[in-house]
Image (cartoon, rainbow, N blue to C red; front, side, top):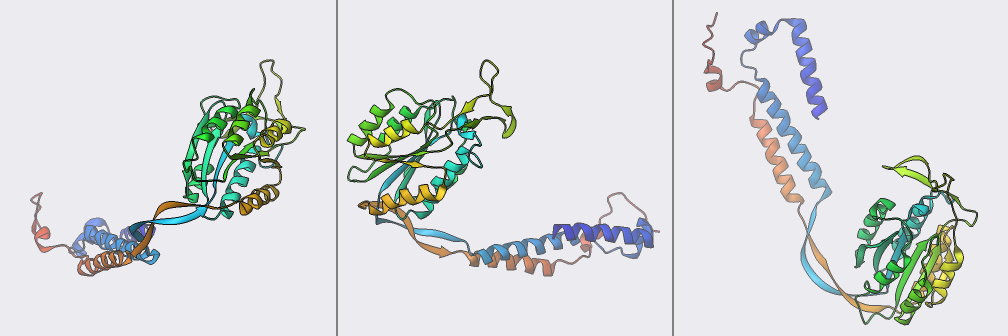
Length: 328
């Protein structure tokens, strides 16, 4: 409507110039007000805008109550080191890992989810929650730029995972690690065993190929070349399956080849579907009230105002002569 308004003014000015000069037009139509014509269009645009919003039927939660839900706790530990940018798996290892997590979340019921990211350090991306849509949102932005140092601090991720499970009554706790297994630390298997002793089952998903691939050198989201070592040689990154298999084996879990998204998701869901569900409490809005009537009312108000505004100059404004001009 703004485009139409601007076009209308442009067409009007061009047509008027073809008909007569500005001074003569003012004499021929002394009561016409460009300002009030603009106001009329503004009122009309606002009226339609509010009516469009009313069609969406906005709702606001009015009652917060505690509900009983059943599910398991599952935490995803996502490797965001630069080796995960390798494109030996399309589109790249990191995006493949995100796809697996996202599609797994899509199939979860009332289970609680949490997300940890790690490279040279581990960071809590999302505390464990029933808000699965938030998990998808945070997951979408996960990248190597979110960590301050590079490497693969998988031990930190394992230690952090221990603090994520805040329900002592939960009997089924799962940690899903998605990584290429490269540059793993010492004592990782011992750390995984500690998780197993605490009842946390670790599922490891290996992303990438044993043949390996190059690592793109990304700057501000753009590929500027390939990552090289201190000798100027192009770095080749490979998937290391053995360490991931050992982590899973020592914590009552299992290893999954993550190069096929559907296969990985199906294996995870197969285990979760057989797990005993634990009851827990969560707070959520249970009643929503439609608010469309407010927008309809405001929209109609703007339209009514538009009807009562005319494109003629107001009498008292017309009588004001700021520059003491003499009428001819």
